[in-house]
Image (cartoon, rainbow, N blue to C red; front, side):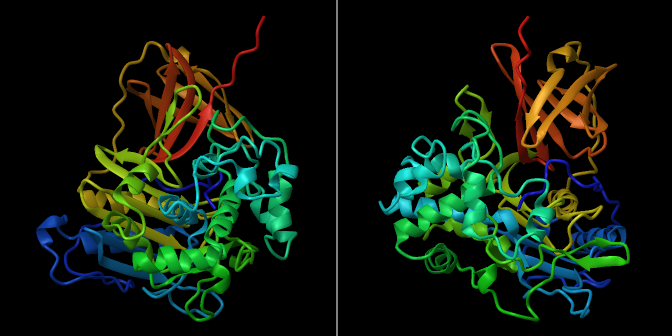
Length: 476
């Protein structure tokens, strides 16, 4: 599952010493022989090790793994810490992690594969794709599969900010619990807005299973993961037992404790896959080589979504888009309360980065680690915000709608103050783009129609995170 919109505190940039040679200092990382060393900044392995160890020290964080691929093949993989604090078993390159809602990218690829073979139509309605839902899901005759895969369906999310409490009351994530959320009134009409919905991807998984004639898990295993060369990718409920699997942790009064989310059965197409760090980092290159979906299918997955009002949102089919200081980027993330899994692919550079960790609610999460490693990989300096004078800040002020409520943007001198439980200063960078003083790698891009601001997209470390429409002002 993706991190909740009210993210836990994290570090924006970790100072990391640049050293030479392969990783030491507690990690098991190594570079693959034969890779042109001139392609990477000097001392990259040592810098990755410093970033990983800084994350562990800032924790509490049980364990994490990092991998880098060049032209689709892993060239570096390393692991730090433990898979389970009770046993002390260390994480390594064969450890299986829950990738949570990063599963959405594989689900979308499965749907595109079925579409290209003529067994599924992405523009068919939900009630025709999954017979019987018309009597349960409001608007099932207007929600198209494409709406599910682009998070524009309006379906209520069965996860949300209260995930841990929601899970603690259940023994599994059964279909009835998901349908309970799907039966709630829609947040918006299909295609009118964007809001992450695990419910939508669960419904997409049902459509995939029906079209394929086998279970979602079987189709992903045999027709997606297998052909992609992902030998260590499983539905988490079917993954091998100890000692290869991590346990999910969270901070407690006495240190790290096992989370209620640990090994919770029932997640499927929305957040149910487990894989190794090397399988995760292989995904973009495997997509680009074909064999599962065509180049046209990949292009369709990576196309931004256009809302009914014409606003373009940087989310494709189960994929987040973006740019990190001029380096085009796509990928996805997953976790609860903080990010535990992240994939970042830079197609123009031929480079891919993956980070997995097994702890929720930590100060330095996988998103922070990935941002710092990405900058080291691309040879980018620490981020510096350079404000651009903006005399029209008032046009951005107002209330913005998110999944669990609203927040305000207000003007204070030369900054926008974003109030969402606490207050944070956003500084103008020009052309409707703002930076965040607290997290200088993050960006806010405001959208306008005919000169009127209608919404804002948030980007974390260059990767699209959320879109929030502006609330219409009440009339006189």
